[in-house]
Image 1 (cartoon, rainbow, N blue to C red):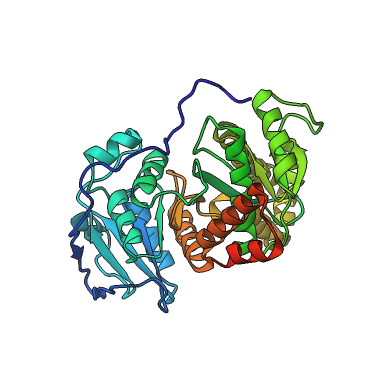
Image 2 (tube, rainbow, N blue to C red):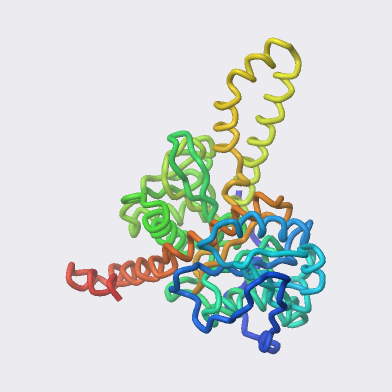
Length: 391
């Protein structure tokens, strides 16, 4: 159920305040390469900037995760944070990892907009500045979600045609493929038009990143039938049915996990609850299975014989393997992960950021929204549509 009267986490009308993070000093690590590349994007290595100070257990966990991810020789990592603190956790570093100094850190309880004004030299602001200036190809943070969103809007700006950015969570479904749910927390209050934009961006992501052809779109609701839900959901249904050619109708919570649709759109309030319930279900299942196996010796023997299958099942259901949620609708590849991330989750988030950058999904979203705008104006001739898509 959508709750009215709540303020969204971030307003798209935020104006840039405070001085930009400029002149940030890179701190060399023992054995680390520190040569600055004036334009890393598009080179042979993908450069990911990591908010090393973000997360419940940062910077220890983020540093450990970065070292895991740095085993990939095709990846260059920039740890953004307090250099002295990071060096103390990492006496030696691989040659594809370096530190970018950021003297401030945004706490998990800090107000998002206030953090921009009060902490212009935070690891979030400095990291996004690297992305904005082309010194990084992607940015990932496990810190304050609202602060990352607010800073992304200020530093990167919105893609044309986007009223509100959204967080999207791709997860395994019962068909063995991926379902993308968005929004999962960026906007607790939405308008129907936002959900139409979410659908367009979600389809572009699935097509470009996951190579899913012609993704279907569903609307998260309390029933399958048209007319179900509150007024907001009913209005969104009418808009999607009219303007989204791949719309298949309402999707209930149980059908969400079954894979009834490839892209499922909702407001950030309901979406966040849905994704947290699915994560909790996975944790509950794993714990119950371990408890049952330990209850009888012959169960343990059977589990040992099936250990390979159990590992594959665990890997498929473990939400931490995803690493983080892409931020849709800003001019840059940004991944936001759980604050309670462990080192493996941090490494997965870095890999997700690399995939987002290399797939150029932001360009795909920009093109898809431009084509959608042409179609709404009524001048979507094949030649015109192809020309807009190629821009």
